[in-house]
Length: 105
Image (cartoon, rainbow, N blue to C red; front, side, top):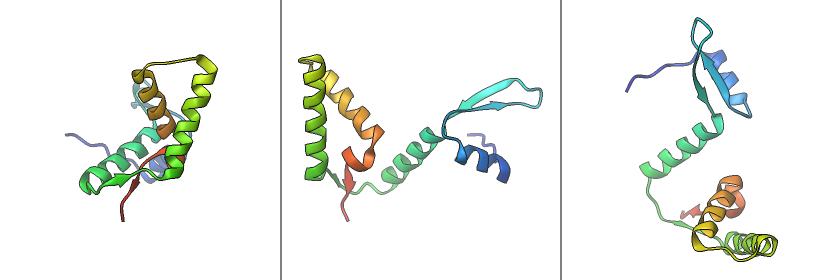
């Protein structure tokens, strides 16, 4: 797979961005869009894949997820399993420290 190595300045701009970054070629035409948040998430996923240790959810994470599901049910009414799974996925993505799994030590 081809790679492009960023200069120090480019890497600093990308790392410091809190939102998407438009990448332009020498002519100024857009060649792509990078989201540094996705890059960090992909890097974490690659680390986990390289070291497939078991992960677990703390009781605090489970309780927080169940509480959030109850608040959502109170807000919109009953929902199906697919909605619940997507809701929990978004919870974990929004705050992995609070809702996400932990790796066993």
